[in-house]
Image 1: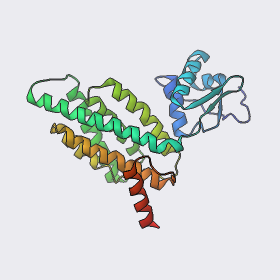
Image 2: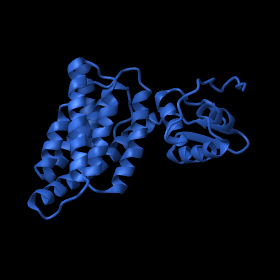
Image 3: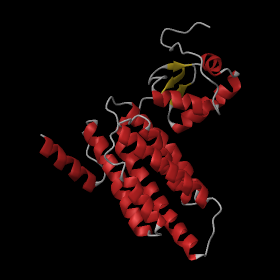
Image 4: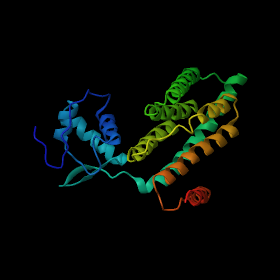
Amino acid sequence: MPHSPDEPALPAVVRPVSVQDAIRRDIIAGVLTPGARVTEAALAQRYEVSRVPVREALRGLESEGFIDSRPHVGSRVAPIPVDDADDLFAVREALEVATARSAARRAAALYSGDESPEDWWRIRRQIATLLDAGDAHVAAGDLDPLVAVNDQIHIAIAELSGSATMTRLLRQLSWKIEWLYAAAVQPRGKRLWPEHRVIVGAIDAGDGERAASLMTAHVRESRIGYLLRYGITTPSSDPTVAAEVARRRSQAG
């Protein structure tokens, strides 16, 4: 099937779990670039499905902010929301602090014998496996897989909180933040990786306030790092973050 001049010719791929997940994955990975025109016909051919699931997927992705659609014009991949980066990190901080605190409280209840959540040990074993995998990648200097492992750990910590709503919100937010990083040439580093074990240790200890404090510092450092590395000049909405960004830029300059 021929492609229009501004519509990317894409290779066939293995059919994923859902069409919406696959299109989102390809947008985040840069296979479908911002501004690229996307049509139901081309996407149906790419993912080897009918137009109906593609149409539904595009509607879902539009609601998530990955697709812009206009009547009589069609659909295009939305711009990467770089201008929203600071706000996205602020929301992420609020979500992750809440889930870390709740996960620690569940741990305290578990160890005191007041509660025995069936999912706890399964998720906790998953986190242990992810931590070991991340350590191995860092030791080998293989940082590309670390991005996915990092995201999986944060989602798993949210799952430990027992809140399906918070986990779902964090997962959706993580897609947008991953897209922010995908827009940059510089890869994410390994400096913050060791903090995950410390955060998980506070959760295991049932110390909700320490887990929340550690998660605050962890996510805030990611926020500051992003604003510095990718040249975001608009001051952060958080005065503490704005002051730290300014301080580090002054030192670097």
